[in-house]
Length: 145
Image 1 (tube, helix red, strand yellow):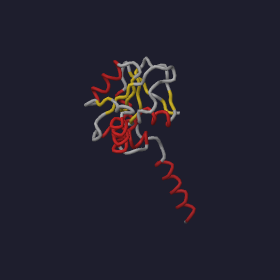
Image 2 (spheres, one colour):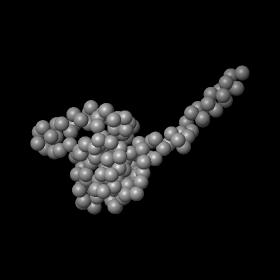
Image 3 (cartoon, helix red, strand yellow):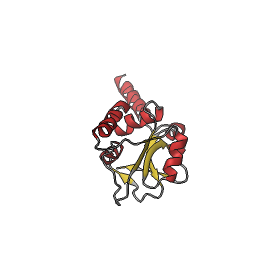
């Protein structure tokens, strides 16, 4: 009887670790960049440094322009937690320190996902985040190595 139970548990674990259904995959948050950017991938640490406003240039030397949504936006929360492994308030605290100390600036705040799409598509060197389903002309996924 315990062999059957063990096999059953293994089978359940197999299904639990399977890729999410296509509809759920479309809601996965991803870092995105302007499609003219020559860089297609970045390390997780590099991406974190960009959103912490510490890495200001791409590998080719061009300037990085960072766009973010409001701290309370669900997409912003999802990006911070799942991709950057920080809470939104931690990012805000980091940006505030840069601004108030005079050593840097905060990213550019956009009001909606629609504005994020427009700004990234029209700003060379820009980076932000969207759901996979929101990729459009002028924007490409930035792979994390």
